[in-house]
Every structure is written in C-alpha cells, then in structure tokens.
Amino acid sequence: MKVLIVEDEAKTGDYLRKGLTENGFVVDLVRNGADGLHLAMTGDYAVIVLDVMLPGMDGWSMLRELRKAKDTPVIFLTARDEVEDRVKGLELGADDYLVKPFAFSELLARLRTLLRRGRNVQAEVLAIADLELDPVRRRVARGTARIDLTAKEFALLHLMMRHQSEVLSRTFIAEQVWDMNFDSNTNVVEVAIRRLRAKMDDPFDRKLLHTVRGMGYVLEERE
Ligand code: CA
Image (cartoon, rainbow, N blue to C red; front, top):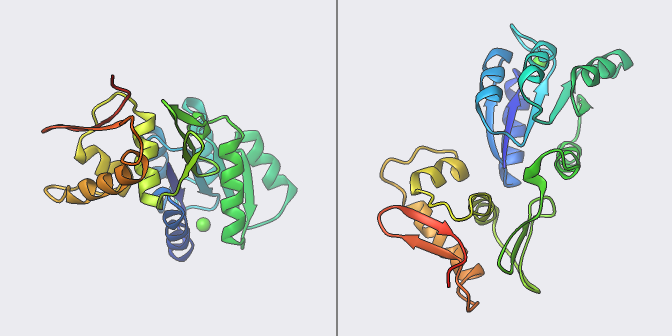
C-alpha cells in the first residue's frame, strides 16, 4: 500500500517515512506542496499525510486542487489545535487530522481506520480460490490455515492479489514493493517470491503463484 507524505520538516518527515515503511507501507516523501500535488495527481496512493504549513503552496491549497480531480483519503497535520483549522480542513475535503506533536501509534491507528472505512477499495479483503488477504487486519489465510508473512512478503502478495491473472514483471514488482528501480538486481524479487511461495503455495495441493518464463509472475487459478 502506498502512502504519500508531504512534510517540509526533515525530522518529522524522515521519522514518519521510517515508521510507515517498518509497518509495511511503501512511502513517498516530498517537502513541498507543489511536488506533493504533482505526485498525488499522478500516483496511486492509498492515503496522503499532508502537513498544513508548507513552503510555497500550503496544505490547504494543495488539498483544494487535489479534490478537483481525486478523492484519495487525506489526513492532515496541523500545528494548532484550533476549531477553525479543523473545520477548514474538513470542508476542503480532508478525512481526518492530527495535531502536532502526535504519537506515531496514533497516526498509524488513524491511517488504518481511514483505510478500513472503505472509501478506498484497497482496504477490501481480497480473495483467489481459498486464499484470502485482509489488508487492514494484515491477515492472510488459505481456508482455515493462517499464513504468517513478513511485511515485504505481505506487500508482495497484496500487490499480486490486486493484479490477479496479470503477469507482473520483476521490475514492476521491485518498484511497487521495494520502491526501487532495479536494473539487474531483480534477484531480490526472486528470493522473496520463493519465500512467499514456500508459505502460501508449497504446503497446499492447488498452486496459485506461477512463474512465466522470461516475463515474471502471475497469481491465478489454473486447472
Ligand atoms: Ca510544516
């Protein structure tokens, strides 16, 4: 799941990026509203964390522009706990807000609530054959068997379940799950696929994750 953070304070931005990455999100971090708006308009984010006070275009203006085109959930960060600020943000189309300073656990809880509320389809439980993935509760199961995955394995499976029956290249997977551009080092993807498969396919009769030689991987039901 991709999160966009728009925050000009280096310390806060880096702290949020680290925390969200550790919790299995893929994070893009920008330091001003213009870059934030550009990424928000062109990217595919599950949620945007938006600071209000930004150099150049502020958070309010960015949100106003974004809402003309997209309804990506937005949680805004404000330095002052004033009713006016909250009302303004919500009127402009923000979904939630946090007053600085806040605990990271609080932000994480709010993000999960936002995703669960269902405005975003990425929060829905995904299924293929007897395999189920719940992105909000971060649970994976095959039938009644619970499958424990690492954060990266979970992100990888989540990506593949969102693109069922599509062949995904190693490069695409690397970009989406690791947020990196791999030129030749797609070995990371192969290793992760092998580990994922060992947990969600190998112990079961019906195989779902298939290698397409020279192209990549596909998650689908085959006879
Ligand atoms: Ca700021």
